[in-house]
Length: 236
Image 1: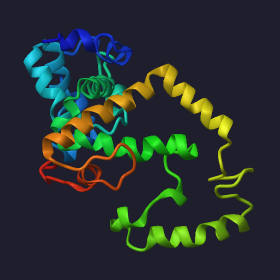
Image 2 (image 1 turned 180 degrees about the vertical axis):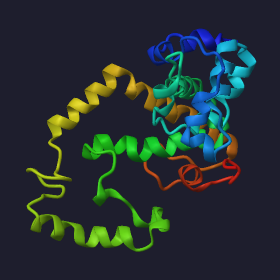
Image 3 (image 1 turned 60 degrees about the vertical axis):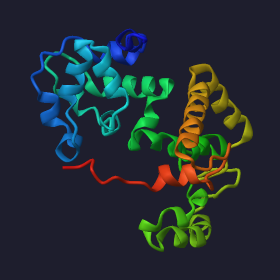
Image 4 (image 1 turned 180 degrees about the horizontal axis):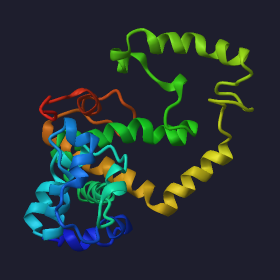
C-alpha cells in the first residue's frame, strides 16, 4: 500500500495549506459548507495530520472531501495560517489519480463535470456556454434555458454582442489558436493527463456497475447516473 501522506506532500497546495493544526475548530465554525453538510474541515485536517494510512484512504473514498465549496473562508480565520480548503484540493486530486473518487456519489460526479464543463473549455473556450446547454438536462430550470436559447442571439445582437461569432463581446466565438493555447496549458500542467485518468477509472466503475459507457458524449447510462443520482443523505 502506498503512503498517502507522502503522496499528499508532493502537492504544493498541501504544503501551503497545512502547517501546524492545533485542532481549534475555527475553520469549521466559519465554514459555510459545515452549516449544511455533514462536513467538518477540522476533522479532515486532523485525520491527515495524524498520518494513519487507513484513515486517509477512507477519506479519499468518502463523500466528505467533495462538500467543500473552496470559498477560502478557512484561510482568513486560521490562527496557525492553515488553509483546509487547499488540503481538500490535494485530497481530491489524489483521489482522482488513484481512482478512489468512483467510490462515492459526489466523487463519481467528477466524470460528469469533466464531460461537460471540462470539455466545454476545449470546444468553446468557456466553462459554460449558454448556447451549449441542453434544457432537457436541466429540467429544474423550467422553460428558462429554452427561452434563453431561443432569444439570446437577438438580445445580444441588439446590445452589440456576438454569440458564437468572431468579434468582441460576451459569448463571442473563441479563435482556434486561443483554444489550442488552452489545450497546451492543460497538457503542460497535467490537466490533460488528469482528465484521461478520470475517464479510465470511470469506465472501470461503469463496468463494475453494469452500465453503458461511451468513450465520448453524455448520452450513455453511466453519465446519466452520475449527473442525476442523489442519495439525499449529504445534508443535515
